Length: 223
Image 1 (tube, rainbow, N blue to C red):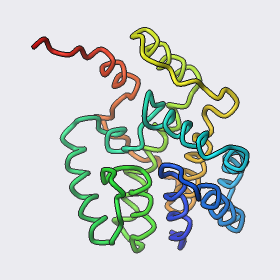
Image 2 (image 1 turned 180 degrees about the vertical axis):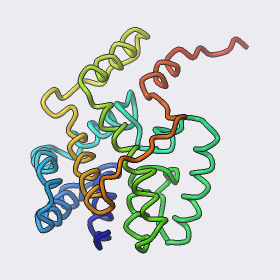
Image 3 (image 1 turned 90 degrees about the vertical axis):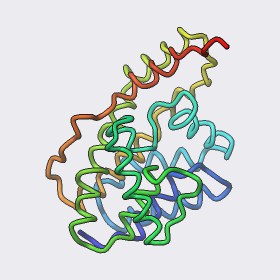
Image 4 (image 1 turned 90 degrees about the horizontal axis):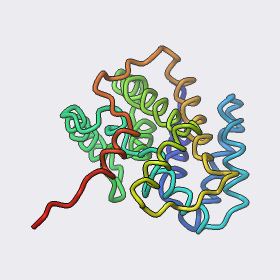
């Protein structure tokens, strides 16, 4: 593993909800990526260009569309991997303990929120725990999240929401899947640091498309 603590912390900052200093955070990360000469820099270039050309409101709207309301995917990687299986509960307990021990502020999010886990990866010393976190948790989760940005899967999600007459957030067609580029860069950096051994994706992994389909089919109980 390379000493990429600053890189991982910069990635985490970019993946939190965008604020007034989002552009500066993106530029800082892009600079670190350029210095690394890693191929993972290339997909992030498009993300940096998008951030420079958009307003804070546009940045927040796209973040919300990507990860929150009517989301493409979720940043809670325990859910990405395990759904509501008890294994997610175990993961949350362990991550919460590690975040606390390393003085990492979860910023009101669950412990398995992607930027929190990336912060933790940068804070951990080299060793088995960091390697397991990278190979067994982060890499398989990122692969599933990236796959959710496939245009066909996005269209299916949109059709589900339209079928149930929910408000559809207007899409920025040109940049709609731009967060995929940031996730690809993060995946590339982790792969470089921890190797490209194929991680084991848990058998209980949750298909996010099925999850939102179930969500919109829930009807309130009659009183």
